[in-house]
Structure formats: C-alpha cells, structure tokens
Length: 105
Image 1 (tube, one colour):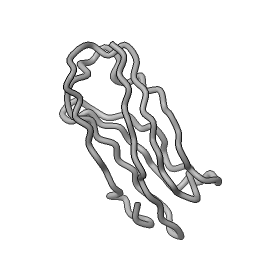
Image 2 (cartoon, rainbow, N blue to C red):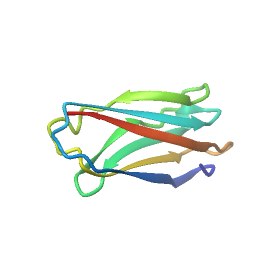
Image 3 (cartoon, rainbow, N blue to C red):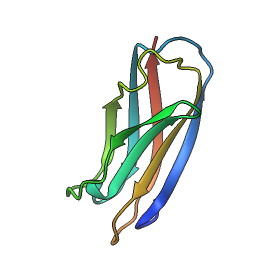
Image 4 (tube, one colour):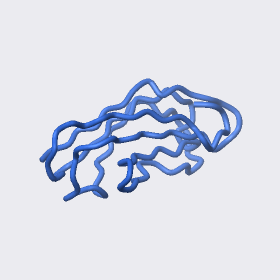
C-alpha cells in the first residue's frame, strides 16, 4: 500500500456459488502503522461497493480485522468481489497481506 496514494491496491476473489446473500463478512489482513490513514472498500464488480473503513486520522495499527457487511444482503453472491485499500496520508506505507469473504446463503 503506497504512501499517500489514493489509487491504493486491490485484489479480486471470484465466487462461483450462486444464491442470495443472507450474511456477508470480510476479513482483511493489513500491516500498516496508522489505521486512520486507510480507506478500505469492498466492491461487487458491476453491482456496487461498501466502505468498510473510511480514513479518519485515528491512531494505532490496522492489523487483521473482520467486518460485517450489510450493503449486499439479498443480492446474488456469485461474481467477482474486489477489496481495495488506499492510504490517504503521508508518512508511512503498508501491506495488504490477504483477505477473504464469507457469504452465507
């Protein structure tokens, strides 16, 4: 995750199983010294996006976190999901170590 780069980084996960979403959670593993520098978004390609965390200048490391996401409830789970992480402040950088999406149907 480049320092002070609004483009950030992203990776995709393709979900093959069809069915309406009853619950959705996203686990994000990021190494970054200031969580408040980061904006983390989940996007379903062609459908919409949810902001999991907006940059808010809070202190403390990001680490590994799990987010419950309600924006896609009732939608189809099959498709390409994208996680993006952008650093909106100067002074440090980080690494997107990995992420996962759990969909309950």
